[in-house]
Length: 511
Ligand SMILES: NC(=O)C1=CN([C@@H]2O[C@H](COP(=O)(O)OP(=O)(O)OC[C@H]3O[C@@H](n4cnc5c(N)ncnc54)[C@H](O)[C@@H]3O)[C@@H](O)[C@H]2O)[C@@H](O)CC1
Ligand SMILES: Nc1ncnc2c1ncn2[C@@H]1O[C@H](COP(=O)(O)OP(=O)(O)O)[C@@H](O)[C@H]1O
Ligand SMILES: [K+]
Image 1 (cartoon, rainbow, N blue to C red):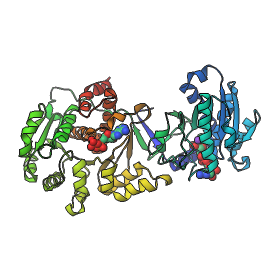
Image 2 (image 1 turned 180 degrees about the horizontal axis):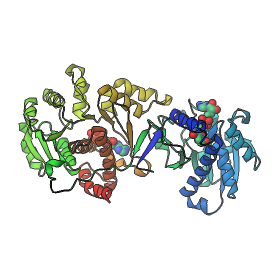
Image 3 (image 1 turned 120 degrees about the vertical axis):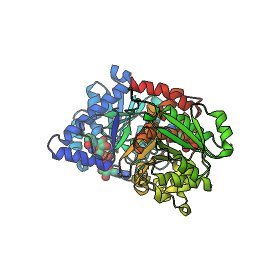
Image 4 (image 1 turned 180 degrees about the vertical axis):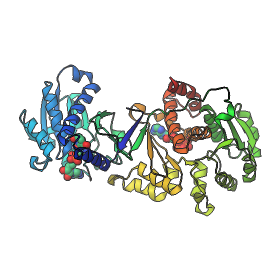
């Protein structure tokens, strides 16, 4: 995968393909041929034994161009000496011209059998290919498709074979990754994803049922307005030079809650320092100072009892970013700090308790958000801030409404960047740009589901904002680094490990 890979919706894919064909640069038939050939290559790369000698395959073809791709795959495998059976669901005459051509070229080589699920269960093959629906899926699949995919998975398991999806496993929304197969489930060993890949391959339910996704290049140009799948962040190295000193890299202030509750802010502060802020200070109320002092060394400490104290601290213009939320408390002191922080216009990460405070309409904080803010909610906090959008993710995902759509709309309303956390973290900007950090597939980091991991994330973002990165850029880089650090530590990870794993992650980025 490239450093930042575009992810599109079905509509964007159709527009891109349509424009490319209309331009005369390429025909639909050529695209289908490239897709089929590329999918076979992806399969052979995934399992070297398949490349070493011919095996056997069953290809399930549907009524649209995804089925057309399936016919090309069948022909290509046959050409490599494979034993291939093709089961078709749909009428040839109703297919597009290109898909009909693919059908006919296969039909000159072997039979096209009707797709009967009862028959699939008894088939023995090393490879089952699902080419029933791709980006054209619009609603819940019919029973026959459900039964066919379940039967294909069962037959593959019985024969020690693999189940591969062409472009999309046929019962998922390519826009939201929502499952459209009722209660039926099947594990897919590979999704061979035509480029640009689809948003639904990296969010929603789909990643839970797919072992890996391999991109298939067919030569379409870069689309506009795509969600960006984040790769390693650039520009993380600290600038060198004779005029560079710690203040060059900014000063982050992390505000802590009361005694006995300062752990979250200390975690965030440590992360901000490790990610390169020149200085980091924890601002704590008087009764919590002793506890913080006992725990902090490189991170500095200052008493910040209330909003007025924060105002005084902010007279130091070198304080270049604030972090509020982890362990802050949802009382009047917390609200006062959030109010002063927002009024100062200083770049600020707002997480956890700060989000709860902002969600409370009686406090009137939401309308004070500005372009220098980054909100970092998990889905629960997001639902407090944007209940209607959270509802839509739940109820309209089957119609294609994604977490990315929700975050985009949320950022527009808030007038600032919104980072919605999860294994599929999305970062949206008010102008509509969205990036996705996928802790999925070869980048899975299940160990991040541990208490305090979110506090570290807000510290990372605050540290990067202190260094001068814009909120969305800082959020995206923080999410990527967070996962990279978690993967370095692996099983047994606790939140304290994450900042300590950063030097190795940052060093690897500089190599
Ligand atoms: N867009 C592109 O640039 C390219 C697309 N290609 C392939 O074409 C696919 C998209 O093809 P299509 O747009 O023809 O769409 P699909 O082949 O995904 O499916 C569309 C067909 O399924 C029917 N259908 C949709 N949902 C249904 C449901 N729930 N129950 C019953 N029938 C349903 C539609 O009426 C239509 O006949 C891609 O996924 C990819 O595999 C490739 O051939 C190459 C290039
Ligand atoms: N299964 C998972 N895979 C990858 N990342 C995860 C997973 N679960 C949670 N995370 C990440 O871990 C962090 C958890 O943050 P949060 O929900 O605020 O928890 P806490 O408040 O306990 O720190 C988020 O950055 C989230 O993206
Ligand atoms: K498919």
